[in-house]
Amino acid sequence: MVSARITPRTTSRTARLIPALARGAGAALLAFLVGALWLVALARPASAHTVGGAGPTNYHTTLTGDPAVPGVRLSVVENGNRVRLVATAGFPILVEGYEKEPYLRLDTRGVWENRRSSATYLNASRTGDDPGPADVVDPSAPPDWVRVSAAQGGRVEAFWHDHRVHWMGSADPPAVRAAPDQRHRIQDWSVPLTANGRQAVYTGTLEWIPGPSPLPWAAGTVAVLAGTAALGLLRQARWPLAAVLAGLVAVDATHSALVAAANADGRLDAFVWGNAVQIAVWAGALAGAVLIVRRSPTGLYLAVSAGLLIAVLGGLPDLGVFVRSGTPVVGPVLVVRVVTAVTLGAGAGLGLAVWLTLRRQPEMSVSSGAPEVPGVSGVSVP
Image (cartoon, rainbow, N blue to C red):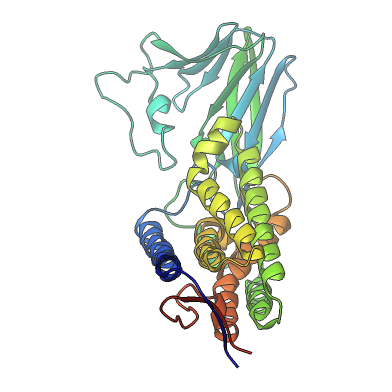
């Protein structure tokens, strides 16, 4: 038996317009997803999950010799990507370059860089392939100091990429190539400086530490993907889907925070700008979770878009942690492997879960709509 309630024709037109708008919103979201994925695919790997271009690696740099200069502390940060020098006394402090020339100067006003030093130009990139202008670089000439940062409350901090503390070869050392599954001591390194006329040399080692087998982590990623996709088989899938989507945002935000904390001079504004795209995706994902709970079909499309984008932006750049022993992230590398597996698995699994949900509950699709009777609304079919 069919019951009907006659309403004005304008109401019928409005009822027909709403599904059309919904279909347009779904198409727009899908277009956004495809466009964003193409941009990500064509662009360089996302830097939000790496530190200064340094990603997962089997090379480990360790400081082993500290001359204990009062008020001066040198450390290797970002998994060997940069050197950090913090000083509250001992000024002036001079750091030697690669030709024993003055390279950096720390005093009560801040950090100064010698434009006559080749290290100033070589340290501008990890590959060190720019020795600087030939008519400017001269290690024997008087230093040409340019201030690069100011002191803060009597505390001076300098950060620089130092080629002495990491492996510079384009290929692995012969010993590593011969036995990559064994641990190797690659080289010893030293960074000399002078603090208030006192010479001091900081020393360390560079080692090769083999990474783990990727099979357990690949299996874990697939397990997370399968578990997430299975949510689409539940009779009431909206709450679990919304929970996974919100949880995925929390995991990826935590991952980004760990990377930002590893950046020696990282600040909140640097974190925000470094994750600008992902913050927008997180906002869309949280909006999708709310819409799913409110039974809006648009939330499902947002779940697919945000899930895949988070997997691409937050998971793929750190895929190397499954096979590398170290990564420039604060905390144990095990944590990074876990969050990477969850990001990849749950992000991709959400797409399958939504597909299964729409197959089982087509009434949730924005492209579906109840049969309309011109001039009639409130149609119900028992």
